[in-house]
Image (cartoon, rainbow, N blue to C red):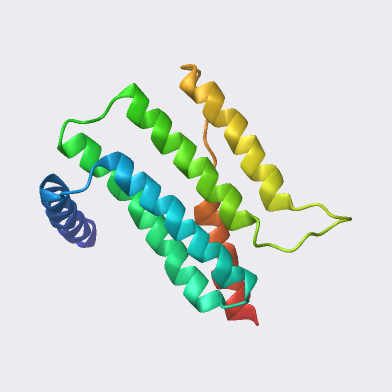
Length: 151
């Protein structure tokens, strides 16, 4: 019973979001670039140790990343060049956000290393190879939330 209720609610939410995506005046590529601009604000928030605002902004980056694909599919605007723009913006966003983290282990930033690995995986994916792109910004958001909880 509970699974059915969750499925019904999530279906209604998904349909509502898709309806909004169809009416969006923004193009998917513009939404991707807005995600990069918001990532710059995330960088400054985390760099100045404004963790709560950084978390809220990072969540908005993830929502924008979700919306660009929804808008592209709902408006039948999905294409290979559009996917390339999306991948490029996602990787730029990761590098910008992860640059806010202090260096550890003798000037080594684990997050930047993982972002470079993700860049390589994205290139392989664009060459039509089946690889998994790591959800690094999602993991980073969880990492930051847990740091605030444990602080």
